[in-house]
Every structure is written in structure tokens, then in C-alpha cells.
Length: 343
Image 1 (cartoon, rainbow, N blue to C red):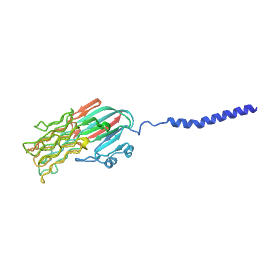
Image 2: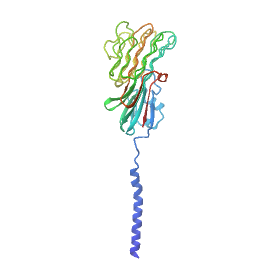
Image 3: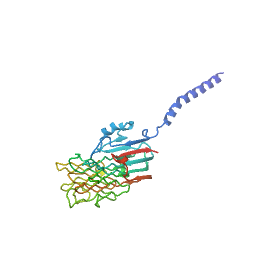
């Protein structure tokens, strides 16, 4: 009898120990997948306009997601450049819109060129930091029907890996709108930037809009490319964003901050700045309009009575299952945006 009781007690003890250990074992196995929950998100200009991009505070006010509050997952350390940390290793679809050029408001509205739209799939690794520039529309002329100053070019949108500065995808911005029916030149879906109306100064191979000097000195700025700044107005040295006399500033490339070119102001007639994302600056009375930023920048134009238009920027797509669309629709006539979705 004593042996039977002892055996029963040993069995009860074994069962109790197993039951105590079991929850601890299950807790170790319940590991969450990824850094945080994520399905898709649209990155915007967060209310910023003109030549400079948004701050972290701007974007935290604009976005309604939990991960924005953790700077390990989302940050803006350089104004305008949004940093997003990949939550889990997967294939993501990235869709990018470039911004439109500014509108010429003299005696009727002549809109800027439209931005390009690019889409592709990308394999991203958990913990990768992805940098994002969301382009902003080139500024309109700052007075309405009392002058014929020139608007700025639209910025380009860019997405790249922070490590090694590897570009993933970019969408070009449109050139500024001109007067006398000279609407802006749309952005390209190919890599080359468009030349300004009547010229041959569009950027290529990732470079900014090229030299635009000589003849009339009233030149707008060229749009920035991925590799170089846009050339300043009336500047004979390619990719020097500072202008010569009576010129507007060229746009800055993404790794130089992506700022749009500052307009030229003669004190009487004010044109528009280039949009954030490297749009070229516009300028004063009868001046040419700014070129669009993009993978390769659009060319800025020279002064004339009709505010001749700047060229739209080029685009780039390093993904798979790509869809590339040049600027052509009113859908892309404002600021740019970037949408990222996990597949």
C-alpha cells in the first residue's frame, strides 16, 4: 500500500511540474513577425510647399500611424528627406509620382508640365533604412495679372536605400508653365530630362539640366538630377547651381538635400521658386521658366516675351513588374507622393 501511495504522489508531482513548465515553453515560441505592423502607407509632402521639404513635426501631424512616433522606424533628420525603416523582409510595391511645374498666372492660367508616375516591385530586408523625397509643385508666379514673371519647375520624387545610397525608383517633375499658350513640358518616363522649349539643354545619365548661358541673360534654373545639381541660370559651368547675373538658381540633387532653386527677383516682378525635389527656379519679368527635377534634370529656359517653358525631368525604375508613365494626366498636376505596400 505504501508503495502504491508513493507512486501516486510521484505521478502527481510529475504532472504538476509539466503544467508549470508548459506556459514558459509556449511564451518563448510566440515571437512577433517584423518590427511593427505594416501593410501600406502613402508618404506625402506633409503640407510643405515651395523649395524646402517638410520637417519631422510636419509629417507626424500629417500621418496617422503608430510607427511614426518611434524614430527608429520613421525620422526626418535632413529637412524634407523622410526615413522609413523596413518592418519585415518581403517584396514591396513602390509607386512614385513627380510634381507638376508652377502655373503662369498672367492674363489667363498656363499650367506647368505634369509629373511622371513610376511603379515597381522591390525586395527589401528588415531593418533597411529607405530614404524618400516627396516632390513639391513648382511655385506659381507670385502676382496674378499685373506682371509676366516666370514660375518654377516641379520637383522630382526619389526613393533610395540609405546604405550605399542605392537609388530604387524616381519620378520626374514637370517644367514651369509659360505665357502665350506655352504650357509646361511634361516629365519623361525615360531616364533623360527634357530640354527647355526650343533648346537642347536637358540632362542625361542622371545629371542635372545643363548650361543655359548666352544671348538673353534672363535665364531660369535647370532641374537637378540624381547625380548632379541643376545648372543655375546664365551659368556657363554645367551643374553649378549658383546663377550668373540675372539668373535663377538651379535645383539641388537629393544627396545635397533636394532643395528647389531660388527664383530671381528684380524687385518688381516675382516668379516662383523651384519645387522641393530639385526643381529649377523661375524669375522676373519675361524670364524663362524653371526645369523639372528628376533622375536627369530638365533644362531651364531663357527670357523672352512669352516666358518660354523649362523642360520636365527624367525618371528611373530599378524594380521588377514595372509600369512607367510619362506626365500626361491632370491626376499628376500637383505635389508628388510615394506609396509603399507589402505584397
